[in-house]
Structure formats: C-alpha cells, structure tokens
Length: 153
Image (cartoon, rainbow, N blue to C red; front, side, top):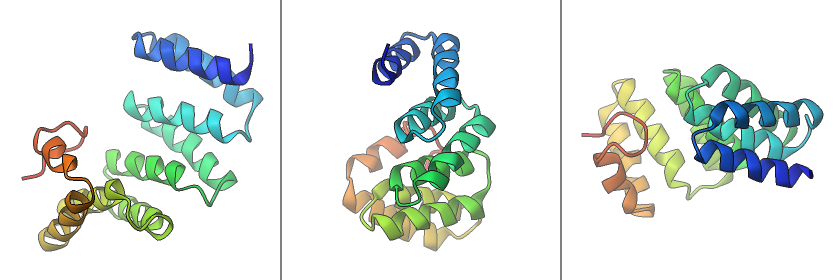
C-alpha cells in the first residue's frame, strides 16, 4: 500500500472511532518516513484532537524543523501549546504564523485566547475582532464553544 493510501486509510479509521488502529498505522509511517511533511502533519492533527499533546508537540515540532516555511504545521503546533496552557509560547507561535500568513484568522483567535488567559483583555479583544472580521463564522463557532477552546465571552 502506498504512503498516500495508508494516510487515507488511517484518517478513515480515525473518523470511524478506531483511533488506536489509526494511531498505530500513523506511528509506523512516521518511523519509516521521518522527513515527509504529509506524514508528520497528518499524524500531528489527530494527536492534537485526541489530546495526546506531548506526542503531537513532538511530531509537529519535527515538521516545523524540517519545513520552517510551512505555516500550517506551525499553526497546529501553536494549538498544541495553547492546549497545554503555555500561553506565552502559544502566542509567540501564533505570531510566527501571522508573519507568514498575515490574514490567518485562526492565528488571530489563538493570540486572543492566549492574551485572555494572560489577563490582557483589551489585547484579546483586538485580536478577536480581527479574527471575526476575517472569518465571521468564527464568532458563532467560538460563542458556541465549537473550537475546542474555552468559550469567549
């Protein structure tokens, strides 16, 4: 089976609530393909979603190290740092994403969440407004708690 087919199968298994099987397949791929962006990021995303944060951080840091110009791997890594409560580091990681993709609403929202946790209410509000202006659906998603992060007042 090709790497691409294995990735698709692992994603399908995860969607069918078979995360242990999907995880095992992805771990094997990472061991065999330590330099492949698609393998690293495809493994990092569900690790984050399943709250296996230390493993997600390791995999995504590797992706960023190998592909420093990639904003998506950095964005997922920033989400990991935010999920770990590492507010200052998460904010820095989101800012790095914004340097690469200045219009990224998820990076703006991540900074807003980090600043809120750090007690900078006005800074959080500014970043939140920028995120909502770029993607209006984020306002509804965050109000309903759909982003997997604390609800934004």
